[in-house]
Length: 401
Image 1 (tube, rainbow, N blue to C red):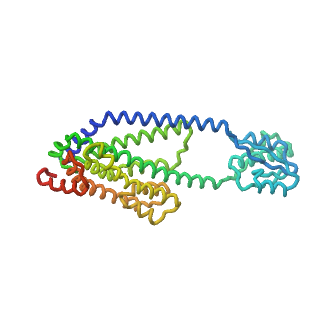
Image 2 (image 1 turned 180 degrees about the horizontal axis):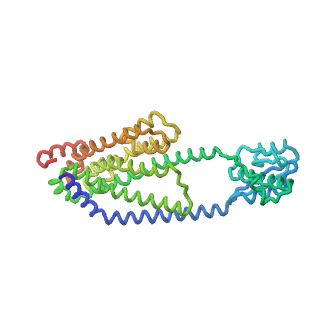
Image 3 (image 1 turned 120 degrees about the vertical axis):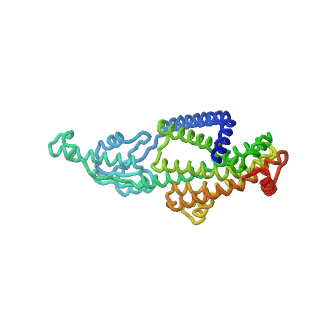
């Protein structure tokens, strides 16, 4: 019976919101597509016009072909200029002042500066190896092309920048998780709040509540609008990731897929909790004009969580307050996905947070159901939270639950 009631409510909500949902989705996808295209064109123009030049100091009898060998191996956007020094001391002074990034002394010594880009370092090392291999081949009377395998090295060079890049990716992912979850909760929460206020103004919902318990009707609304929000978020995310991969403007790290899945899970949990609160808030307004004032109060809850999440993650550590907030249902949707992205949340912490969210969602839907019922029963008046809850509770014996 309950499933049949929920199915009917969901079908009704989907039918009534189908047209505006399709229109808004197409508008959002079009605007995002245009924005991505503009960003891609801008980045290409900037990359075409911008070339970074690094200085290489030369001391002593350096190989004549070194400059050409390095330039052949440099990627686009990087260039070199050479400066010759008389002594090693002068070259070291140039390194300390930043005049050059690296110094080559003779044909067997390299002095590295504090900030040497990996592409430049790799190109220099490969160039020196090639020159040395060619010299050895000539001294042995061998043809260079036939003797290259004799001089191949099995050494592996690894840079700490890879670890730094991974950390930066995790930091960016945690920040994105906070922003996306906040925007999604605010957007789709207000969506359901205004929908309830509109129904209250039309007084159609009064007839529905005569046959459907308030928490069943509220659950059906959450499922319907939440599913549309999930579809919209999935389409938007697919567009951004797909466009980024095809246009080569975004690099998807290994943590991205898992983070996206967790963000979808926490979107559903956060929407389930806040959607019930927004629906109850929308029922307090007399019409859609008053709903903005009522819902602005509800907006403070996710805003507090957003501010706390931004401040907490900017500190760069898994603090006690951050861990605590990830278990509080009102703030968990904005903080737990970020902790997951940073690898700070353990399996039992995630399981506990999800369990607390589910219990909170059930409790909020039950309580918000009475506020919702009492609010829509007073179709022509604006109510407070306590007054609406009492009105809904008083209506229970006559209208069923």
